[in-house]
Image: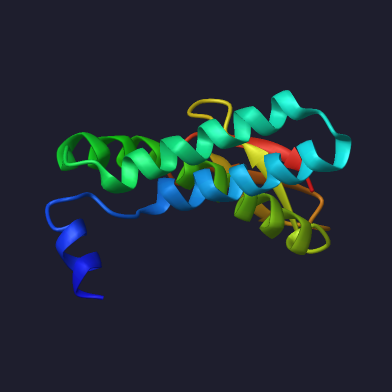
Length: 130
């Protein structure tokens, strides 16, 4: 085990982008083997090579920047996904509207008739039926 520690000294190692690449590699390899479309398997091997390159890279600052770029979009996707899940869970109790002024999402209770909604971000008031 000492040789692993000596080999990885000064190298970047693993991060969230590496995990994402490996998951995508496994999915792509499984689809390629299932469909017997071998150019797709070649693409999967290229992803694996890219993953290994990132792990053993000594350019730590560049790999860190790549990971931060990936996390920016990954967290945006997860935020959208969790928002959709919340909408599905709340759809019987709440209704969502967009502010006509600043486009922020507003959650109001259902079955209140016509109500005046005040946006907490910009203060604009508008009337909607819930």
